Image (cartoon, one colour):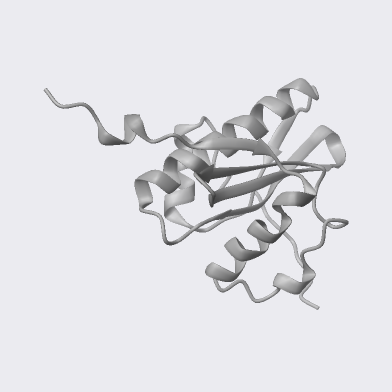
Length: 141
């Protein structure tokens, strides 16, 4: 019986530092993010991770502390040039590390905003709850 070829993929994970900033910007550009210029080290949350396959960035994500003892999963992005399975592994590593940091900080929970079905399925597999009954208010500027 043959093993899963992804079992041999070595994805490195690093706490996000300034030296990774250009790779984060590149990930956002690859996803055609329109507000790349708005991403600065000063605006990024202090807690973040970036994953690599060799020298190539695969995924990054951050945890932004908000009021009420919660954190918001923020700036989660992946490299569209990697296959979905490798991106999935990399995103899992990033998200699991952010969850562990939230636990270490003794936070009440994590919130995130998405309408992407793939992200919603991943969230369910990681024991997040989808809160359809909650109302989100926003002011478009």
